Length: 324
Image (cartoon, rainbow, N blue to C red; front, side):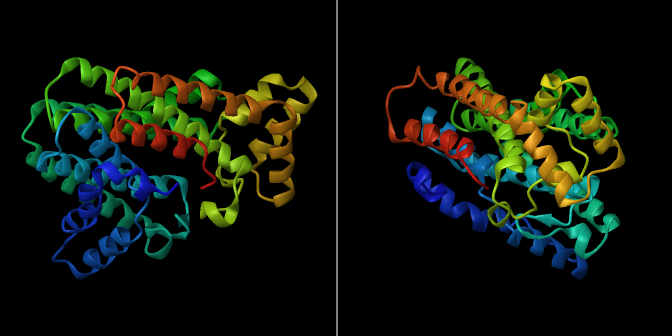
């Protein structure tokens, strides 16, 4: 199933989103205009604005405030990706060269800052202090997550608690905020806000574990980056964390020494991926994706059957059964 099919109940807003979103990308500085147009042209799946629209529709008729909320979360998400690529020293994003690879880190950081500024300007359109508080809290958590990732990048001894703290902040926080902003764009139901906060958080956790699994199982041609890319960047994620916990001391020491020297060759990547599979890390991660998917969907049980509810279910399954 394609994203456009999942978006059918909110198709009018989802189709109109691109033009309204890109209208926010503008600068009078020619170089900046060139760069941000490049960023705008490298569109992703727009999961977060789609979450805004679907959770809004689940609670009432969509409004211009729903559109504004979708624009805010995608602007914010795009800004974090630009900074992410600098921190990770990435040269590919969605199969295309990153800003820092084409231009340089200084420009990338400033473009990220500009997008954050545009996010702040767009928040004004929501005219809702609660919405501002939700996004501000997510921004703080995401920044803490980035700092945690830098701290953990120098250590091969990250444990599961550290990992879940990291992905809760870096990924789940914005999924959760998107769902809450969807509700707020149509009503002020506190119980609905709480349900959607938890739905979004569990969905975000499942999404990120799946994303990390793709580094071990994905198809490079579909991912838009090399398989094993996280390992090359020194990121130790759940499949390997669990495998190291299960392994004997000798094998564990060998993997840790490899990580500490830096993983560079395809043979090293293949060896570590196979290790994660043999030691049960990959299967364990798959099971947790299922668990968090179930937890997320449980928060939709209180809602009567509808096309919108079904689309939310399909969106969660789409994200947790993907190969890119």
